Length: 260
Image (cartoon, rainbow, N blue to C red):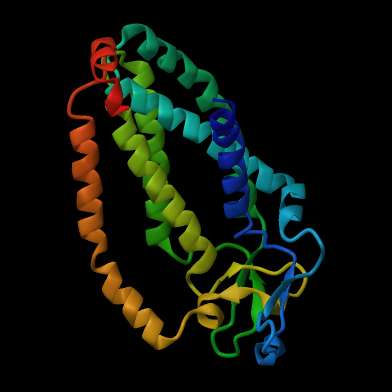
């Protein structure tokens, strides 16, 4: 139980902090001359001895990590509300939504506002030179729309659940909204000639889709494999629908504990 708690707390914070580094970048550099080193043909190296852990010293990375942590708690509460038939536990989950939602909005809005106002990184297609840009959302209105729809879906799932006690489908809205929001953030970080992983040590070492993609053969194989994605998603939907076909109650836990 202790390790589950540690994993549930530290995991989301570190994951959110790592995702946040896609925007301000990390302290590394690229040395393509190392490709000729038969012993260790590694072209990317950390510029200090922290090996990337110094990202946690950036308060904005920690801010997104905390936002992901509270979002995970929100999604967990919404899932319990949708799939557990136990009045006392459901009421506790609804009460927990208030505090976790307030803290999530504080950290998430702070990170988003700071990101929109801060300088980003883009690359000049003609020369491959990396240079700073002000914003990328306005250049990709479709991505901006996806981001807004995702945020609204998350908020709607939460607010509707809090507003209407009988409503228990909030996880569907919040879950789908989370996927859209994260997708938009990743696209704005790496699409439209941007550096998806900037280097704060050497700007020209920043990673872009153009200078860090795999070979054409590998990309073709990945394209073929991606055709299977809809089937994987269909299986996941079928499996979870079978698991959640009937709400969990105390009787089921006592009689069918082996299922859990």
